[in-house]
Length: 315
Image 1 (cartoon, rainbow, N blue to C red):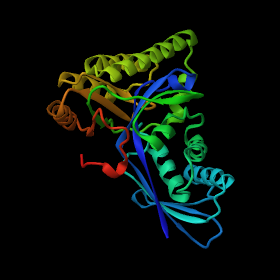
Image 2 (cartoon, rainbow, N blue to C red):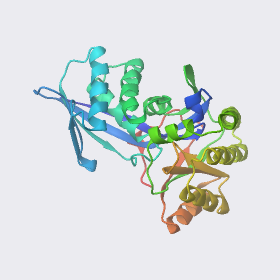
Image 3 (cartoon, rainbow, N blue to C red):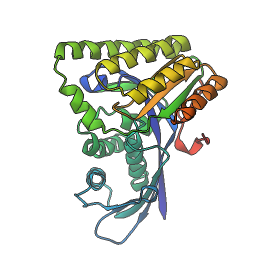
């Protein structure tokens, strides 16, 4: 008998990097995500396969980050009582290393497939062990949103708060064409010389997260768009933007986006643009397409609490 696990991808609306330093952040689950199927096998150790990426690792393949992450996740699940040796086949509709929570979504989906009865606490700790292999010092926001979807106001070492938007919101999510590693970008920020300025920027980002939460809750899309663009300025000051990201932000705003910014670790990855409606979303998508950037639209209705990958619509 096989067990299935699913998880959401995510975009960080406000707060990347600042959340590592204890500032608050805002994140949103998206329909694209990951799915995993686990089947019991008679073997010495568990196996993880991702056919779409031509990946096949055993639990103790220490030479690969994915093998180490899978081993760390399985160890945490065994500590929580898991006993089966399994073959897990996983897939993701998110590009890897693109700032959309691909690794966390895979981790949550795999953990849920291995132990469908595990509670949220067990899943979170197992996925944090998985995430630590890839990111070194993960804030936990990716794992949290992958597991619960919805809208989350998050601060490290503090219980996350689910928030409810006062209006429907439409975003265009585009890929800059260049991947980046979260661990490397976090280390880059940690090595910036002017620490007083860095602390000031982190504080400003935290303030923007609080403003963004209020804008979302009252349904003020214009204020939220301005907040996204202000956050992008902060991230540029941290040397996290790239020419491609700046170009995407400029094109989006020229075509009617209310605001735009990189989402995730930066140094590549993805951009989000907040738009008023579907027609503006299509204009931004077409503009990005003409520049060579792939994208998809995410619409979140004010009545929605959680959106999982199984409800994904074609881009």
